[in-house]
Image (tube, rainbow, N blue to C red; front, top):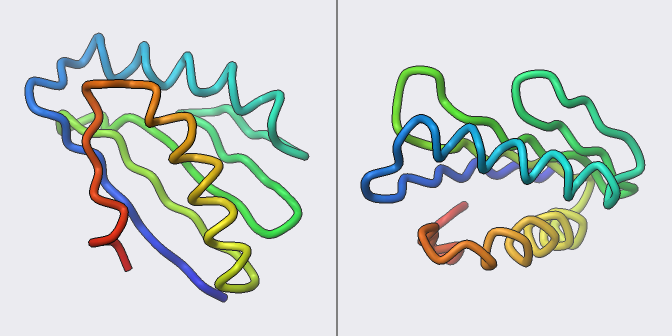
Amino acid sequence: MDLTQLSLIPKFFRDDKKFKLIEELVKYFRDNCDKVVDVDGIRGYIEDGWFLLRASNTQPLIVVRCEAKTKEGLEKIKKLIKNKLDEYSFIHLDWEKQP
């Protein structure tokens, strides 16, 4: 299995903003996944694997984790997430630095 863990740490990421962001992402990904568990963020399942997006309860950050059966599947999941997160100008994540 290919696994990657990504952390989003935007500058001045207030608690109210991070939890509102997660609410918006849950609504979006609910319609773009085969299965969704939306307790404490969202765990989305698609054919190639799964991903987790959640707001940290102790730090000003959003955590992104994803896992797939293949490297190609992992890239597909990362692209799905990245395409949505790129809509938010306050999120700056260097996807190339991630494992």
